[in-house]
Image 1: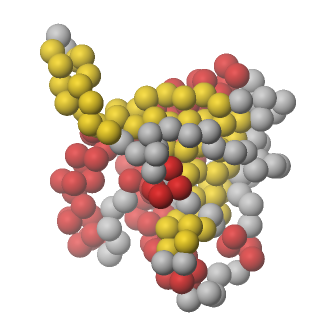
Image 2 (image 1 turned 45 degrees about the vertical axis):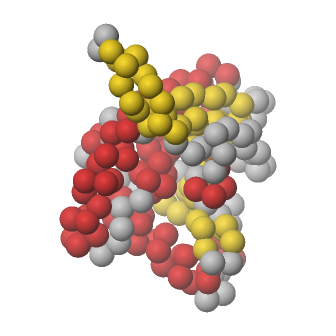
Image 3 (image 1 turned 120 degrees about the horizontal axis):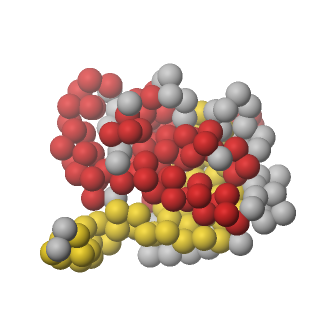
Length: 196
């Protein structure tokens, strides 16, 4: 089963555009939306463990789509609060470099607790991502489009993306999946919460 939700990514993209240079100068890696999505998904899995039941100690191992010169790979990465977005981005950068050099280990390409698809893997407006057993869910965040949104009694231009959460309904109740998707949306629409 798949649930779809529109997510206003304007604040997140504005944050990335405004802070990217300072972030890269401070942390040594560029700020990317995919890492913020992964951190938000990890926090969502903490709040709703049914979507990533194999996660140990509350931190989900996220199979994150990473675009490389050789194609898209899905390494398992930990999006822990302790290491933050910068630590996750450094791991992804290292994985990308080693994937292109052909030096990834089987453990790094092992199946995580939940899969996140972004970028080229979700470059359309919407799709239905497949769940890879024994995982319980896969989340895809699709291409953002600028659209007019009625807000504060006026139309405002906003960047909106569709998030699709596919889940195994034998493992995850529909209501739980819906609540998890809305929780993920709330984090992305208020991205400062992810950095705290």
